[in-house]
Amino acid sequence: MNDETAPLAVQTSIKERRKALKWSQEKLAQEAGISTTAVHNLEAGKNGFTDKTLASLAGALSCRPADLLLPMTEAAPPIRTEPEILSFLARIEGLKKTDIDTAFGVILLALQANRGGSQSDEDRDQPERANRRRESVPSR
Image (cartoon, helix red, strand yellow):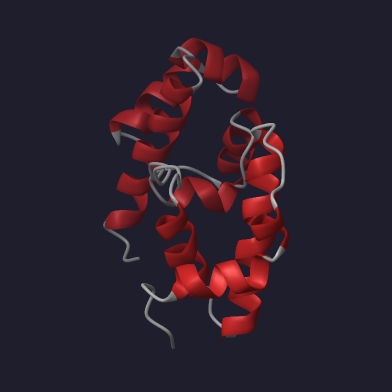
């Protein structure tokens, strides 16, 4: 991150986080122990910030000071289908095929338990079932 982008990221991050909490600038200033003018000027890019100000704002916003150096990112959409679960597991570096199959079986059992379903004989044999479903997921 260069010197030109750091202030922009901080002002954007503070504003995004404040709005996510549905706080006014006055509320953030009060929670951080700084003036409303300081919050306004910081969000508008009129003033820089000190380590102390950044730490106060981070404390008020329940994040780390380093988190304020980057804009907030939107949460990834939820994983809902078995192929999405397998695709996610396949992206975890260092997992072997057997690890993926085991994790997939455990996840399926947890989902089934949370949905209140009963376990059939086929569901008890998760590694074999996981192997069949993995055929559509590229291996590493």
